[in-house]
Image (cartoon, rainbow, N blue to C red; front, side, top):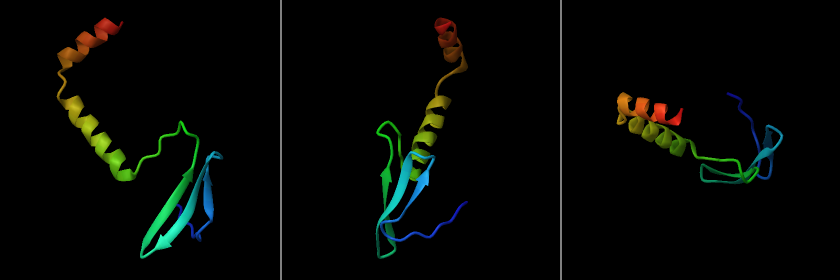
Length: 75
Protein backbone atom coordinates (compact mmCIF):
# COMPACT_ATOMS: atom_id res chain seq x y z
CA UNK A 1 0.00 0.00 0.00
CA UNK A 2 1.29 3.43 -0.94
CA UNK A 3 0.60 6.10 1.67
CA UNK A 4 0.85 9.77 0.68
CA UNK A 5 0.29 13.02 2.52
CA UNK A 6 -1.77 15.60 0.61
CA UNK A 7 -3.24 18.98 1.49
CA UNK A 8 -6.57 20.41 0.35
CA UNK A 9 -6.40 21.14 -3.38
CA UNK A 10 -3.56 18.69 -3.99
CA UNK A 11 -4.06 15.49 -5.93
CA UNK A 12 -2.63 12.21 -7.11
CA UNK A 13 -2.62 11.05 -10.75
CA UNK A 14 -3.46 7.41 -11.48
CA UNK A 15 -2.76 5.76 -14.82
CA UNK A 16 -2.30 9.16 -16.54
CA UNK A 17 -6.06 9.74 -16.94
CA UNK A 18 -7.47 9.76 -13.39
CA UNK A 19 -6.76 12.44 -10.79
CA UNK A 20 -7.86 12.05 -7.18
CA UNK A 21 -7.97 15.44 -5.49
CA UNK A 22 -8.43 16.40 -1.82
CA UNK A 23 -11.48 18.68 -1.76
CA UNK A 24 -12.02 19.15 1.96
CA UNK A 25 -10.83 17.88 5.33
CA UNK A 26 -13.16 18.41 8.26
CA UNK A 27 -13.71 16.65 11.60
CA UNK A 28 -11.81 13.51 10.61
CA UNK A 29 -13.57 13.21 7.23
CA UNK A 30 -11.76 13.64 3.93
CA UNK A 31 -13.75 14.61 0.80
CA UNK A 32 -12.19 13.34 -2.41
CA UNK A 33 -12.84 14.51 -5.95
CA UNK A 34 -12.24 12.25 -8.94
CA UNK A 35 -11.37 13.59 -12.38
CA UNK A 36 -11.76 10.63 -14.73
CA UNK A 37 -13.17 9.73 -18.14
CA UNK A 38 -16.98 9.56 -18.06
CA UNK A 39 -16.97 5.93 -19.18
CA UNK A 40 -14.86 4.88 -16.17
CA UNK A 41 -16.77 3.21 -13.34
CA UNK A 42 -15.87 4.53 -9.90
CA UNK A 43 -17.40 2.72 -6.91
CA UNK A 44 -17.07 3.04 -3.17
CA UNK A 45 -15.28 -0.01 -1.79
CA UNK A 46 -18.26 -1.17 0.29
CA UNK A 47 -20.57 -0.99 -2.75
CA UNK A 48 -18.15 -3.01 -4.86
CA UNK A 49 -17.96 -5.62 -2.09
CA UNK A 50 -21.78 -5.81 -1.86
CA UNK A 51 -22.10 -6.26 -5.65
CA UNK A 52 -19.47 -9.00 -5.60
CA UNK A 53 -21.22 -10.83 -2.76
CA UNK A 54 -24.59 -10.54 -4.53
CA UNK A 55 -23.08 -11.98 -7.72
CA UNK A 56 -21.60 -14.91 -5.79
CA UNK A 57 -24.95 -15.64 -4.14
CA UNK A 58 -26.79 -15.38 -7.49
CA UNK A 59 -24.35 -17.78 -9.12
CA UNK A 60 -25.00 -20.36 -6.38
CA UNK A 61 -28.71 -20.41 -7.21
CA UNK A 62 -28.14 -21.53 -10.83
CA UNK A 63 -27.84 -25.27 -11.41
CA UNK A 64 -25.02 -26.78 -13.46
CA UNK A 65 -27.58 -28.38 -15.78
CA UNK A 66 -29.07 -25.00 -16.59
CA UNK A 67 -25.61 -23.58 -17.27
CA UNK A 68 -24.78 -26.54 -19.57
CA UNK A 69 -28.03 -26.00 -21.51
CA UNK A 70 -27.28 -22.32 -21.88
CA UNK A 71 -23.72 -23.06 -22.98
CA UNK A 72 -24.96 -25.45 -25.68
CA UNK A 73 -27.50 -22.90 -26.94
CA UNK A 74 -24.84 -20.20 -27.17
CA UNK A 75 -22.51 -22.40 -29.24
